[in-house]
Length: 192
Image 1 (cartoon, helix red, strand yellow):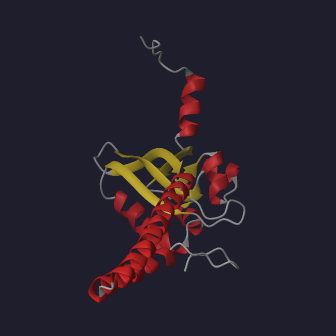
Image 2 (cartoon, helix red, strand yellow):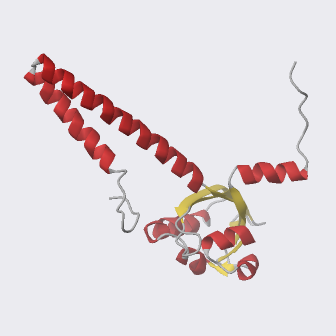
Image 3 (cartoon, one colour):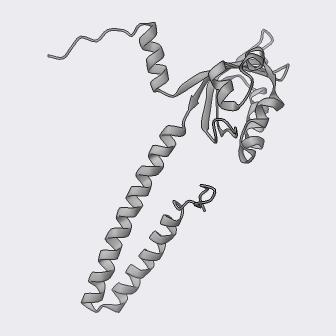
């Protein structure tokens, strides 16, 4: 028979949060346009933790998001001021100290006494490690496909079936395009 389960204590809960990628908490006062974030989350964003704990203007937070995500996140935050309920926004950071990170803000937008959306609260999750693991797994799969199609090309040549060889050649080209998505520029580390 298996071991008995016990509810986690405070230390266990923090360990579970850490293992889940939770990097902090946030609170957004929709009417003042200020966002307060906990110290670990602030550091990932490149914000001063002390200032961020008191709340920074939304523009300061948005300046820490990746330029390609900034308008989308800003629109999402503004749209959340129209309705209360669950909130979720995924974006990348752009900070010299922590590099580009994939983050997720998840929480809830609460209403004030008049029924208007007023304040959001939630957690921030760092998705970077999961994204990297998924990317490596996908890259390995595509490499395996390439190995198999190379073997198929050799077999199609031995059979002397031009139509079959032409189909395999088309497949090789498509797999080559997929492989190219995983190439990095050796000088800057960016994907092509």
